[in-house]
Length: 110
Image (cartoon, rainbow, N blue to C red; front, side, top):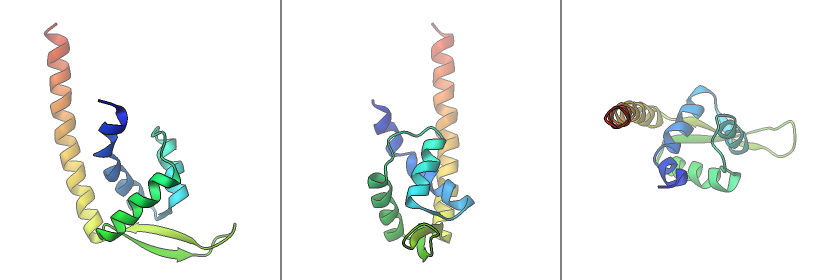
């Protein structure tokens, strides 16, 4: 399984977590993901994801003036998005625990 396939189910939760801390615009979000070690998340990947999240009412968007060019679309979490983030965190902790148990038992039984 490639890392891209593994990330598909995880990246939405990470994006919601980043947006929860501070409203961001698309390019800024791509930079933050890269700073956390996620590679290959271009604006061409980020914007369709943000538009989908907006349709699903997980994020809301507002246009704000930019000091460097045209207005930017900033995204923030909705109440539904905050609930989804909490569900993601719970699922992630359960998955992480299960994977760690398998890896520890698999390594120790060799």
